[in-house]
Image (cartoon, rainbow, N blue to C red; front, side, top):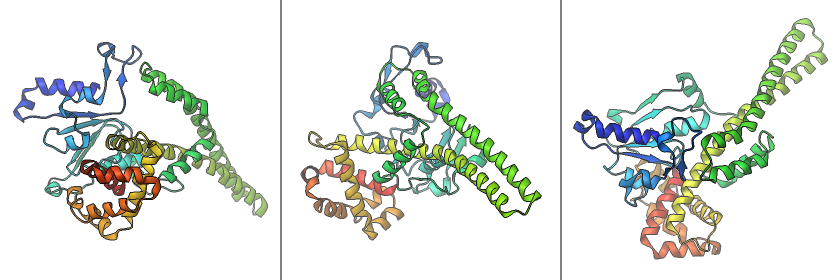
Length: 366
């Protein structure tokens, strides 16, 4: 919120900005934001509630992706939203002021990795105020023993990852429920929400610190044993102890990566659901119905080699004019009986059909 207000103020007051022409800023976030007295520098923002609609009056009812694709907007401010599932080939620069790591880093910076006429000559640009270059490089190295969710839109992956996270014992379920209640409450400050997460954070930190210490100690023991004796049994016991401590340390490191993957997936699927809710009459449809239907159609289209090649080698606008329209019509017509209601809505409403086609297209691009 502060960034958006500061941008608008600067653009209105700075004469050099006016000389460059009209620059409009969009801010993207989910839900409703309100400040409390506990939040730093919030005095002037108290008793106000902020939503995407109120902060972006220039949208005029348009979907954010479509509005940003026009000449009306040149800058988008985000915290977490649109880090996945946002395919805008015109993006050419990114300014980062938050820590990025693992799959979150890869998915965020990859928003710039889309082709567009003239973009190759001008290149892309990232100005990072927080992260070290070697940390970014490390994030792009292939992960091991962790679900990267390259196929981020597969619901089966997220359920497996959810079970894996819950079984870790880092967080308790009553803490999750308390967090959800606070997050959805309109009068809870960011500080209050952060405090709910504190026990889990401290739990992980304590376990990780102990695991690192144990690994370092057992490694020293193994090295000393190897130097002092040739006894196979003693060496095997020392090595097994070291390996077990390393596995525990790795499990806790992987937990952080998996948690980031889960968060990115949740944000992505929330955006997909929001778009599907805007398109379909949902009186008799659950969130699961809509997600399963979109994924069913996506999976059918993924079997079409011609369509997938066109998606890989063209901009969204070009690919959507190729074999994609006929292919998605065919996939919808082959829907099972459980999806008949959504199929009928698709066939009877051309505007809905175009919107749904773009949702499925975005799922295929992941």
